[in-house]
Length: 422
Length: 192
Image (cartoon, rainbow over all chains, first blue to last red; front, side, top):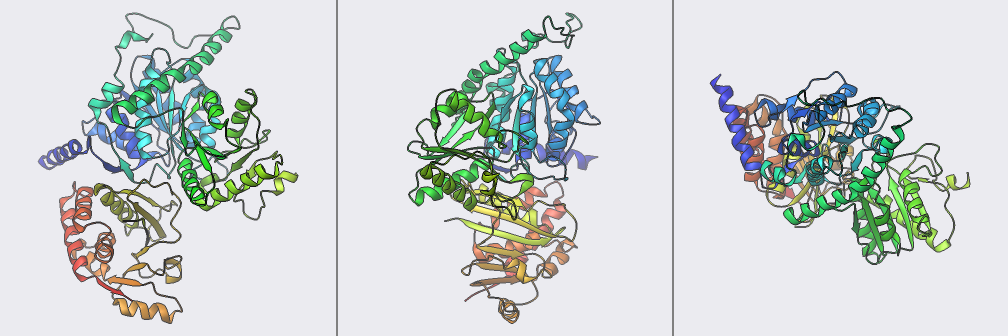
């Protein structure tokens, strides 16, 4: 008995040292720390690889008395998100985390969370979808939830996992937003990689993302009954949907404001996009998540060779930063996308491309462009391969030829140029 | 310091991943940037395991696996050298858990038709681990050997990281301190 108590005290002391200094952490640990520092009230998480440690760590924080939250044990992800949505409807700060098949199992409730305007926050360790069964990273799961009405923040490194989650609570709960927010961390590539992390600690997080008084938005309260989740007949359903459209559009302002203020307070500023070596760039790639790190490394190599390469990282996938991307790409000579997701049967099978091409086309901007898919199901992408992609884009710029299909880079026994002839 | 890339080869259960992570953590605590990650697969005891640590003074964008390491650390002497030497730079360092001296390791590699790297360090990590921990979990001994041969971080920082990692089980933490001290002492390093 006394031994157990001693152990607990030791752990708490260690924790105090952790706050406010540079530590080493995996993405999963960073996510759990952010949630602890945000002082969530409710968590309902069904464990799935590679997200399991988030659930374990939160349970540990609660067991050790470092976090006063209700952890609801559920039998699957459909219930996990249902529980979290219901908790949020009572005014609680609620969190869940999932990955891959777990997100698919939640899919029905994803729409319900956003259309009931419940400000829940979720961490998504991005991972491939079955079949074949694959536990490794790509963005198939995340891209599958683009239409569900959530705000989507992508993280490039472990620090961003923490920072994005802290901002997520502030954005989601803002009275002008009231929408769920998902924060991604690349499965394994961030979830299981040890990197430097500067956690802010609870005091700072709660000053940046304070818990609002319970009555600031309509919540379930036995003393003041309201109905949540009622029938929407053809007479009013459409109006509710339009409100969601407007809410997501207008959330941009709140997301930008949160990113700016985060920068002012903690020195790490966040925008809807991040531009890397774009000032004089002639060739630009657009990417997201931890893949953006690899593209930056490729840009560094190309710059040493004298190639004017740049890159744009999409941090906020929803709402899509169309204005910002159009402005950033306006002066480049050619652009391309690199993504770990496939939109099967689409006009262009790499799904970032279709959005950017549309954003540019409606603004009358047309120039040489291409799209690249690589890294599906955890296939390693090497920096030298991205350098080759830039060179392919350069060749497209010089020849002026039109590329009508996505390049599937790195498929064994396949020349990606063959697709262009199909 | 410029960038240093270290690849750990072991088998499931020997702690290769913990070694890579602890080394990365030590570098981070010393104010450097580091990425430490395993080659992610289904985890099985006895199966070959790869883990990577990349250390730099500046933020690291390269998240790719390490194909041309500066240092290779071999936790399990039964692994084939053809595999663990792959890509190791000629100017690099090989750290092996073995009863053999570095010179004998070099001879053994040459007799197998393999080129030895510039530096070889060896230590009987299995014996040291069994002596203090009672099990052939050799990762902490191999970290000490690596530090003696490369000084990539200080032994004290790694000892602190390992101690904190096992702080809930002080007897294991203490045993590992003894392992690291003895392994550091007994590691032999030979450079051509």
